Image (cartoon, rainbow, N blue to C red; front, side, top):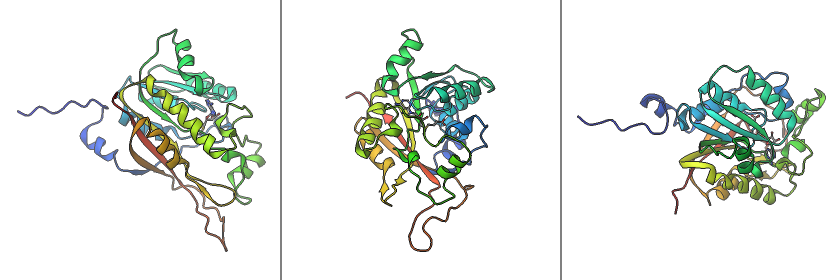
Length: 278
Ligand SMILES: C[S@@+](CC[C@H](N)C(=O)[O-])C[C@H]1O[C@@H](n2cnc3c(N)ncnc32)[C@H](O)[C@@H]1O
């Protein structure tokens, strides 16, 4: 009898595995709590769950260096994965830590306040010198300094958040990657942080970086996803991109009746893998 090969990646059956490999999918975020709305760019827990159940087994270790209000950690708790997140802004750490308390699930999830540039030191300090080996990274960095720029008309999210008294950007810290003015410097600094995580990862670990290409105020597209993929592929093997679509977002009337301006309702999920040691 031919032996079935062992599933070394996840706990999925063959049918679920194959379904999960389709290169685009729709996830419409569940509604956020009032506290979570305090973060201007949270990603949905359902999205993270989809990826962590594909790229890890139960009790695996997941890392998110730009953890915001702990969406990755919440999803990991629900999915029974251990997780560590780092977030620069104390306010978001407080919101995320509180939200985590009410989540049913299992595993050990920790949100650490600090700069992702110091990820190794922060994690080491938290775990009393014992560094977990991470099986997977899922994260979404700031999309350059786009939160600071209002690019739509009256209906823009930026203006609506302003009117509702909600935060429109992350922080004023000079370590906040969302405050870097120069685009090339932004790409370099995000890539440097993510490339340095290589040593924290277990053999053949995967990474998923969720990001959007963004139209600047002058109408020129900044291809953040493609530029990051190029920089990260200097250290990791670039495996694929997946497209996360939302189909419940309101259409904005941006360029009518003179100019083509797209309603961007998709994000790139760049999939990379730790390269075998050369
Ligand atoms: C796109 S958001 C991530 C949101 C997160 N996925 C969530 O669902 O809550 C990017 C986050 O990176 C944080 N950030 C910016 N620079 C950072 C740095 N140097 N170290 C750690 N976090 C940083 C921002 O405060 C922001 O919360």
